[in-house]
Amino acid sequence: DQQVKQNSPSLSVQEGRISILNCDYTNSMFDYFLWYKKYPAEGPTFLISISSIKDKNEDGRFTVFLNKSAKHLSLHIVPSQPGDSAVYFCAASPSQKAAGNKLTFGGGTRVLVKP
Amino acid sequence: NAGVMQNPRHLVRRRGQEARLRCSPMKGHSHVYWYRQLPEEGLKFMVYLQKENIIDESGMPKERFSAEFPKEGPSILRIQQVVRGDSAAYFCASSPWDRGYGYTFGSGTRLTVV
Image (tube, rainbow over all chains, first blue to last red; front, side, top):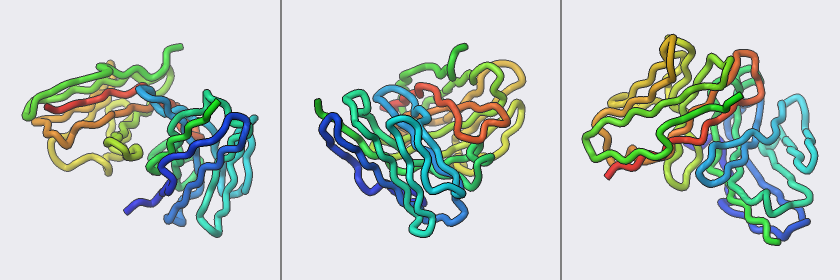
């Protein structure tokens, strides 16, 4: 039973354009959402997060949007750069404090940014 | 300030042997988490420990797997009598108590069972 799903296993985008990564969840108890970036042979690195009291959070080139009624979130990367090529994981937790505890991850989306 | 240190980076074991994976959390972090990533899948939670305590082991297989985080030294994930299906990347993460927006992962141990 996959509670967090990333339906696009891969995404290819031209440098300078927008990358849009999608994530859907089923558990209505999830209240806090995070995106992690992972390079090969390295551990995931925290990128950006959003609480359910917000519908948007922005950090530089990265923006996360949350549609709680649709149980859907997305990550926008603008403009995309070759160094953004990595696997991106969406993760969810029941609350911001509990995000220090167990996270439920999606299967990941592999992004390739072409120069 | 070193990050989360995991060793070994790569571990090869024959079926039936034991695997020991070590994780040293970041300085000042007293909470350790273990996740497993099977090939082409996302990370799956295994266990959450504080010093000398297992807080949540709901993701641990019922048999052959155990974890500890002693008062002194690294956290250890132990897999007894490994099977081919245990081949995966095992990631450790640590956090301080009041960190509410995620935690810091190590680079992982890639276990291969032959």
